[in-house]
Length: 138
Image (cartoon, rainbow, N blue to C red; front, top):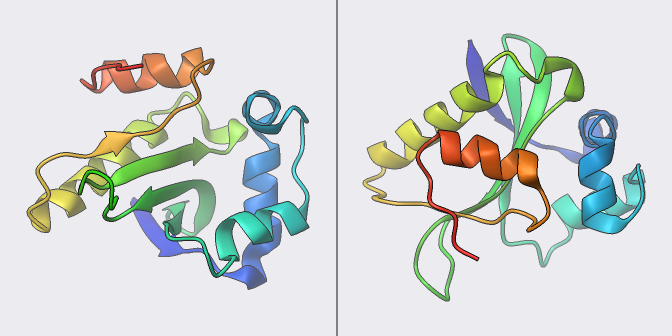
């Protein structure tokens, strides 16, 4: 069963493991295959960070991350900026199931739509989101 658990600094090694298992994404994001704990702490725990980040768990196993902004002040919509599944768990439908659970939780809060932010050169992500019915707008 897929569940969400808020990320905490004491589990930074888990964040690092999930993030660094996705080397192609890291190269697109920052030009390097891996990210350091310090970079990840700044990204997820800096006081200026306005997003909410959760682990995606399969039973008791941390398999991914989901990061979103509840309310973008520019357009009023929630924005999903990251849905990342550990490389070892990709291809089994866990990303799809995690998104559908996330979407269900938004619907329960009466949120009618969500926006996505993906890297423009991330063809894998584009294909994934198109398969879930999203439209691509550059």
